[in-house]
Image 1 (cartoon, helix red, strand yellow):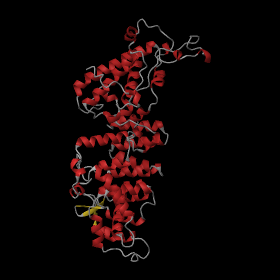
Image 2 (spheres, one colour):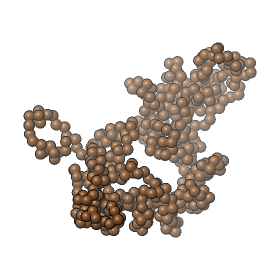
Image 3 (cartoon, rainbow, N blue to C red):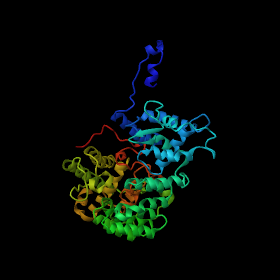
Image 4 (cartoon, rainbow, N blue to C red):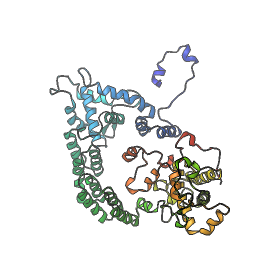
Length: 512
């Protein structure tokens, strides 16, 4: 119940005995964080939009009033309704969707809105006077929300209306009239507006408009503009895309070096892609550096490979097979357990040195945290301590006689790093390995690290985070993420269990 309704509500016995709770329009930071957690658990476009409006209108008001305003707008263009007011709002919606994100001048809406009045003879439905239409569109319905919001010297449509319109019609080349694109190209004179128009046109598959928006800015030699034009040409003209990216790379733009790698990667030219990724890494691009610094393929010494005639190398008949014939050997698990413990110790030790400091591969290198994807490099001490515990948890699984099966994204990364370390111990430090496995019988299948990865991991999706071409894949709203059906790659989701049954004891604490 809104406060104005409560104030006018007649007093009666039921109201006197009720217990009232006040829900403020603008929520506290703790309340907003709980809403964000709910969004991470259950992706909801409405809640996501409401969170972006939390500082202005409040989440509850956006969720409640938005649908009412949308329904009112769609019903307004009728006889004895508010057709001119609705036309003003529709014009504002289209101009904003076309990239004019600054407040829109009233004169611009006045000049365009006639095109949005229904019918060929606009006077038949008797549109209301302009001032009345403007008042209708800018008057709050409840609390502070309204169809058109006054800001500085202009107007902008309520964000919910943009979202609702796109839900019904989706971006497409036909979504916006040609006249709207022409107006945005003429009105968007500032550099940032032309970029906004270019991105809006790209989202609607109007690459021709995107190029026209940015072309005037190339004369100033802006490398960001030149680089963006390279990206805009990639779909239909890879040679022209490469030309623009080479121009920006030659101007010293490090990002363009990586994007040239992406261009060749998508063209299935892997060797050439690696050459450009290496150039980008040498120039200081962190994503490219991480690409070459990710977990390496494990080494398997030939001296421990199964030999011809050994019990495990011979074909096992189906009726003789049992689960005991498959899986890592005891020696393999023992070295893996030791590697988990070593990495846990190193991770805890590093916490004293780095605290909340951002890590990298140069002056702030910190093993094992710098060996993780770039999106984790800015995480704080609390996050890193949880990461250190993941190595301990997996070591504890082996100690308990179980397979170390990762229960979350963080444990998957821990597995990749640990298998790499374990394999290098066998190759580079045989004396230590012999001490660790003393008393455990040798088997032909010892130290088959590839089998470990196959046995312990359901997939290797987490390794996409090291791929330059997959930048942004952690975002649940990204195209690649949705196409591949990947979850829990965002850094703040790394410790969330994959399944309810995977939850580890929350009271297990930390070793240190």
